[in-house]
Amino acid sequence: MIPHILIGKGVLERQKADFVALPIAMGTLGTDPQFDRLNQAVDGELRALAQQAEFAGRADQVFECTTLGRLPQQRILLVGTGTDDAREEARMRNFAAVAVRHGANSGALRLALALPPKLAVEQLRAVAEGVILGAYRFTKYLTSERSPKRQIETVILCGLPKETVSAKRAIEVGQKIGQAVTLCRDAVNEPSNVMTPERFAHTASNIARRHGFRAKVLDARGIDRAGMALLSAVGRGSRNEPRFVHLTYVPKSRPKKKIVFLGKGLTFDSGGLCIKPAAGMDEMKSDMAGAAAVLGVMDAIGALTPPVEVHGLFVLAENMPDGNAYRPGDVFGSLDGKTVEIINTDAEGRLALADGLAYASKLRPDVIIDAATLTGASMVALGKSCSAYFTADEGWSSRFKLAAQMAGESFWQMPLLAELRDQLKSDVADLKHTGDRFGGAITAAMFLKEFVGDAPWIHCDIAGPVLADRPKNMYPKGATGHPVLTFIRLLEALG
Image 1 (cartoon, helix red, strand yellow):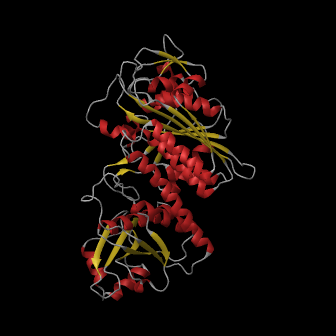
Image 2 (tube, rainbow, N blue to C red; image 1 turned 180 degrees about the vertical axis):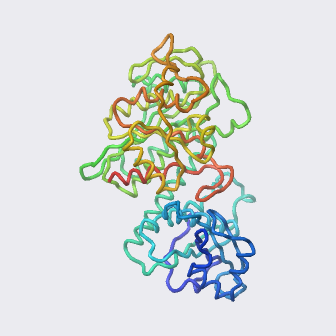
Image 3 (spheres, rainbow, N blue to C red; image 1 turned 45 degrees about the horizontal axis):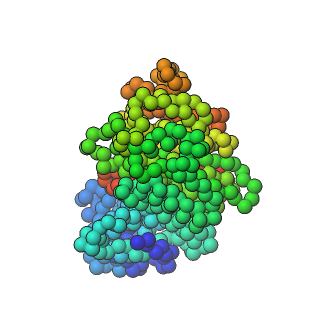
């Protein structure tokens, strides 16, 4: 259920709601005027109880207490927003998401959010995004006994001086972007027996139809005819045949830039003949999270209509170990003509992406951005909450870093070390597709670089943050929707 967002009229203390939530920055408990007003309304009990609970405003710290019947609201919720290191846009998005999720878990139907005075329009949009992200639940397969009985129906935004056209537009856009992120989450959360390559392609085509984009879908035979032998090889072992999808958005005015987003869409990865251990294999339904992120971006474009030409490419396959599966030692050609020796069938994502990158380069874009749950090595280096990104173009690196900061998503630039290129030399083909264990995320990126051509390129290895084992800030447990917001902010910066 998507909450209805209203702009509150009148003072905060008189809003009718189950909860009233306040954002509190680190160390500002004694200076926040909204906190002081609520504290006075409950005869100083709020401050005393918050101090007793050692609430300090740390990021994601939550404190809840009763209003003692002295306010129209039943409960007061304080949400820590951390220090000033984070951008205000990201802090407000996280505040709204945490408050809505906490309220939903407590059975609230109406929630009032206290917004800081003089809130900028982009921050108001971030609040609306956070409301949608915090309300998200994947309940499709829960029976009546397990399904949530109460969900937040209304969120009231308090503190805005008046309801302006720009404020209403910011909320509307924020809601649609939040829904685009939840579309990505839904796709990743779907089980692999439902989200097959064919089903994913159908979902992408529906988005194109809804927004008036051009759509091109290649089935297994079309992939072979197009010369995408690497993508074809990855999908050979599954009864669910591979797909390649190309969505195109062209603005009505002359485009300022042309950008290509490419997503890895392994709807299930068993490892192929180099089969994975059973422990953790159930999470391999998320190996299409890169493609799901691009799906979310294309859906958001329908709301944003940016003055930028955008191409969304999806390489979709299942990596399974039947009698027709590709083998270690096999050699295949690629779309750009290079031959590749297969070393490990569990390193399949870079093969599918190689053909996708070669296709993308033929579009002559200003930049290619790929997203892939590519290597465990990136998680070894950066943990599960931060994604790696690689690029040889420092100008695009700066733009990307700023977009991630505005989105509140964690990325760290990793090097493209030329000395590791030798690990990809093959005795029987132009390349082998894996190198040594150490530096595995870098050699994977170096392999992909071989297929990019001359276009500026950013490779995002997002293996860690696409799934969360517990809720944190705007991310729920399960599929997070990372890095849809970063891609959207980058796209908007080009307009």
